[in-house]
Length: 597
Image (cartoon, rainbow, N blue to C red):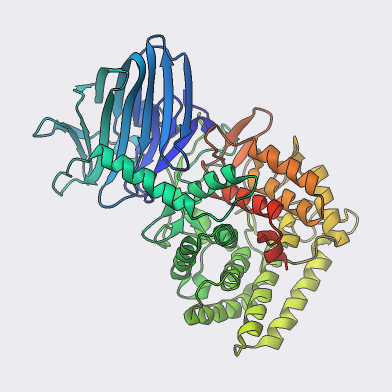
């Protein structure tokens, strides 16, 4: 049976990433990019859909794992009746070919090991043709355009379309396995110097984490979250994927299974703030540059999400041959939310560019010209219903949060123009900003509930409303904000964690049922900080941090009854929220105070 989501750890090379289970099996890898077809897809099916197991052949008495120092190099220690062995897994930040290195290191006694390599290209369906390398150093597996080359001193054998090996490791011995991806039509890649690759990967991550300027009490979890965010970055373009996986369900057996291997405009501001406030200005600049390239063109064609290089065509389809994680079908690739109308992204976009200027990122005249065109377009469409922040598959509504982000777009454009003394229809923008604000307070607030509501005329709550004071729409001590936060705490929580909205009462076009959305609980903590309830906020934050798995990773959602992760993993949005809340708790000048000012 597929392992629990929290049983996985992440390695990557800043182009793609792999998930490794506690049992020593790589169950997910899209090669050569985050959004490429998977060659290991056991995560969404069975072992026959592709995996790479490297583990003791005998019963494991004890297992523990950790990342080596502040790096993305994973060490898993297995203890058996005869000894102890470590498996160190890593992918070197790419400089040419993509490589997975697996080092089996004897620690004590003598341990019998097994390897079971099942390569299945095209998301677990295509069996490659496997041949031995001319020099006898390993095998080459080819299917159409794909080639994976495995090199090791260990002798392998083929059986039932598996590549198998059995070997022993004694104390102080090291056995290495290196798998390299390359196109099938080019010459075989050169062998990898394993020790050099290890040293280079370790040095890269140590130098990268040394750049962090965060030195507060939550340094360990903040650093791990920053490393995770960097690992989800596609280095050539600066785009940051929401997660390296697709179709991990928001409810086991449910239909809410989406492809998150893309970049969302919605994440822009919080990502920039997290990076800038921890000293990673180069990464913030790269992310902003990716965003500007992605949205360039006609403002009417701006999308909610894009491919990692800014691709716009992301058609959604189901893969019928994969049964889904623990039977949670369909497995989807592509994401139709790219074509939705989500008004909130315009506010996120304008806020990101504004915060970038405030954070002293380089100015861009072309960016301001594009912003002028975007505001002009938003003036035409802001009164339309939309699909909302949660990407509803039901009928469009006048979502309160969407309208708030229209206000944010206008507000940030006005502030930018006032600071730069740029020529623009400033008085018209100010009048429209006031009009939007007035309408939201009149139509999006329910006096009987003493709370803002999910959509105009609705009585539903929405965790996105927690962002109203964080974006500066109203001050955190405004009675309407206090009432909204109180309503969400009492009526939109499950075991003390915040739901996005009540799916049982929603018309989102999908069957009800999902876990708590972790980022929303961090938003609640941010509100408590702004209200001066520091002890309560810290308690909630530390409870959320305690949900991290044994190597410090978070998923999108959590089931507080079963005590298990749900949704795609690891989730950038959850880690971004963790970083920002840690900063809000420990710094006077923080993302929350900067954005809400």
